[in-house]
Image (cartoon, rainbow, N blue to C red):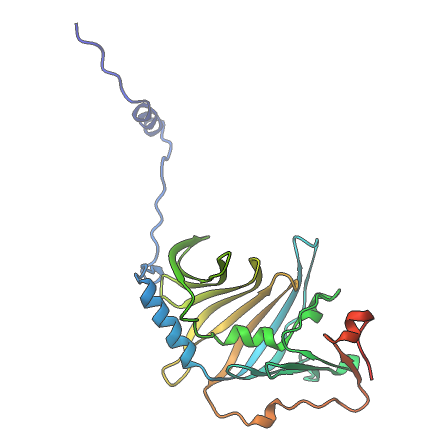
Length: 295
């Protein structure tokens, strides 16, 4: 006598739901103009794309809106500051000047320059003029005081890859986005990641650059969006978000006006101490021994 046929449980459940009038699925049709098919590329193709981008931008002259944020969920306090209007002038690879102005009245809040060796920051509201090594890093009690012109410089220019460093290639998924990533590795007794370079697969534009120090320490994350043509065949993002995890701040830069690769006079990077301001030197032996050195 033949055995009774067993109906798979999932089919029984689906039939019951349909019979009971329950919806078992919903369909959303994405508008045609919002459909963004994924593009294909290769490790070599993206390396060439990055190198072309690196060579295409020599100088930056931009009017920006700056929005600082400090703290994080790890510190327990998050502070969002008001938007500040400003200007950025930079020449690859080392020179940058950035000026911030108070909204509406336009008075200067800060003026900072770096030549790759030394940074100078004038803060008129506090009557201070700060000088120190460009690479000097020392966490301040107030996170916004960790901001250095060199941080901005490293976010708006993209240094060429070291041909001696291996580069790994993989595909990433982050939130609702799909990306390709190039991982630059330094070789030694223990291989370490030095940079991760992310490309958005919907347009293959640079999306994010992560910078690591020895020991795997993540020091900088720069995110890029709203890429637009900027003359001479170059493209540049109009929105840059710079995160410095160990400095405990984030800076949003929205570029409203941009000129690339124009001539920049050398004297634009001269910043003298304003009369009557207090000179504060950081990163010197005196500071290490017990506080900032003052004249």
